[in-house]
Length: 376
Image (tube, rainbow, N blue to C red; front, side, top):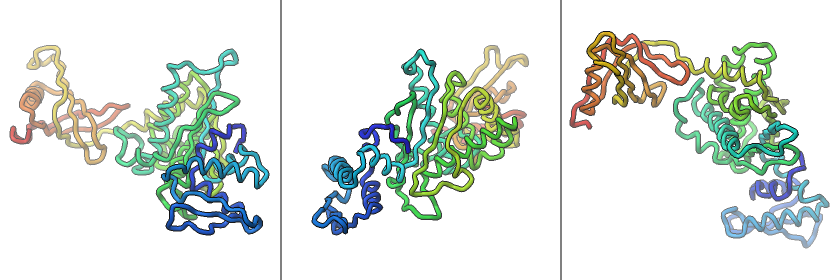
């Protein structure tokens, strides 16, 4: 890991578990503390020297104890504080670094652009987590549990040398016990991003979007494509995205050598195309039930020439919570008006499809009111 980041920014990312694991690596041994509030470490080659740490990071003063221990280890092992902190972070945390390419005559990015970068980076991680729960080409809503999967991801201080962002995930903070055969969710989320970026490079090189379209289950879904493009402000700003793997767990073989990918106009164009293709759901016979949330007709709805549309919100068995738009004839439209005014649901049968981010039910054969006023 690069050591040009300040000690303060690195130390703030070191969990108590990271520190104790690194001490064991340096030859320190636990002498006591199991089941108590404090644990004592001794070194077989340093007689009479003890280091005392809390057993839980939630205890008062644990942050100061970590800092003091880092200072002591730096002197004992003759290593600078920054190098020591960088070693610990590189051992126990994956890092994703995003370096924005800004013009030579500018020193930073406009204030109004910063929230777009941050939101897009969050969405990249969040929708990668979504695919770890239920791999889909596109999401209308964030799957239950996805937000909790990214709780151990942190935005870190920007790093020297260029304007950028760093996102870190600690392996030690994972709620799942580390083992050699099943990496924690935090690692899988980053691996999915890395795999997608690797395949993106191939898709651009060979001008073959199918490379990405056929791998959404293990790489990029539509929302992740959108997020990577949005970090560049849809092509206005080129950037590099780099991943540094925690050394305590080897990454999966297919992306073990991945380090960095440049995102520029060709990549953004490919991402836009792939995203739109992944959003498409081809027409399929289906039925929709739900409340009418929107009615629109600018003329007399009984006229044959009138354009009558409604929108219905439904919780679909396969696609989750979606809003479906329907274009109706006079009879069905008046039924929808009646359902809306009385608070009843409708049940419509037709051809359900999605283009872009919009769902429609076409070729409608049946529309009926369901439920009763007592259900309202």
